[in-house]
Amino acid sequence: MNRNSSCYALILRSRPLGEHRQIWLLSAEGLQQATVFGGPKSKLRSCASPFHSGQVWVYRDPAKDTRKLTDFDVHSWRPGLREMYDRIMAADAAAETILASHGGGGNWGRALFLAEETLDALAASDGETCGRILLCFLWQWIDFLGLRPGFDGCAFCGKQTSSGGRQPDRLYYLPGEGMVCDGCIADRPVLAETGPGCRHWLETVRPLSPVQLSRYTLDKKSFAEAKSLVTAVLAEALGRRLASWEILASGLFS
Image 1 (cartoon, rainbow, N blue to C red):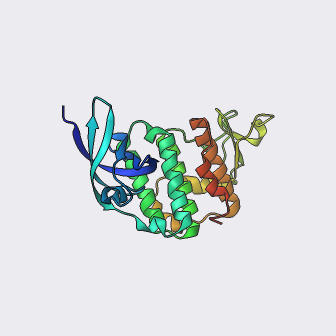
Image 2 (tube, one colour):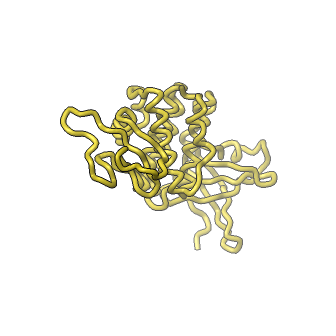
Image 3 (tube, rainbow, N blue to C red):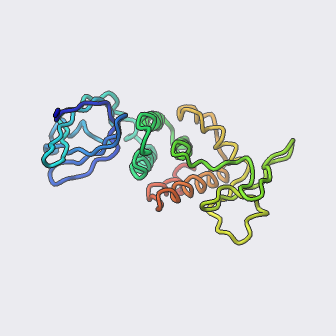
């Protein structure tokens, strides 16, 4: 059995492990953890930092079922992420979302592509665009997981949300049901309310690359509605809300 393997990977997280580090890697082969040995002055340890990507070499000990990072040829350092607080916080939120959902659990190559596109866009973005990039990533991740609620009509009565020249009605996200019109809400628990501006923006940016988002602005009300919707859908899927999502409600991106 070959105990050494190599692949292209992105480091999503790094945590102390005694005097060493534990890292989480996302590659086209899946998610894995590995230990980075060495003290603070170790060159390998400095290379193996969150949001760096490149070719990694990992040694697996079958007896202990542990993995050790033995080498890392960094292709993308993304230094811009550390130049602005909002960039690095948005990157952390994206990485935590990927890890909490186990990398999507299947199409690892697509997950890696979405992650790298988002991080590259964040590394060169201004403070205002960071929020839209993170929102877009969360919405695209929802779509990737197959959880995107439809905006075409009410999940209960089937009422269409647009007809001819009429403005779309407001739609409400109900847990386990999807989008529902105001006539069908009754006393059901509403997790998020969306207006035309929010829904139009989400559907417009869903197929876009994150680097294009500087051209697609969003008013504060629609931003808040989009944030409530994407975090509600993801929280329902994960069974919990991630603390890193609160960066969207902090006012940092307004």
